Length: 199
Image (cartoon, one colour):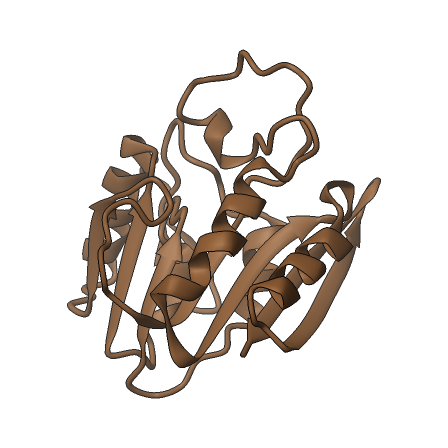
């Protein structure tokens, strides 16, 4: 773990080797979190845990999951750094660790970059490698997320204009989400898009 402590809006965090570092997409999600007092939150792909740390401010509980074991350690250390007691960290490939649990808010800064070379298999690349069209993980997530969301729950996911935002909106509609909003920022050659959806 890096010894340097970073802060974003008074929240402390450290970065770690082999873990996705907070960037513009991370801060877009943090700045637009749909938090309500007393909710139960799930973050898929927690990375350093910075998004979950902000989600913990109003929430009853925050469950942080990742497929990258380095990220789980990093997130756990950042929870300790901020002395949070309403957060837990679990290894999970998307929703694989859950059966019938339901959450009020599900967050995911998806691996959205199109990557032609499918030989990228290390844990770090899983944080941004979205497969050939950038949609490999996004589609799996959208098709499953409704099963783990309370009836009046909200899902927020981040993706790139390079991975076809309209396809995500259409798939969310097919899965019963009727209230859809987008917020975006432009960076270099792409738009980073935050989709907020509820039923």
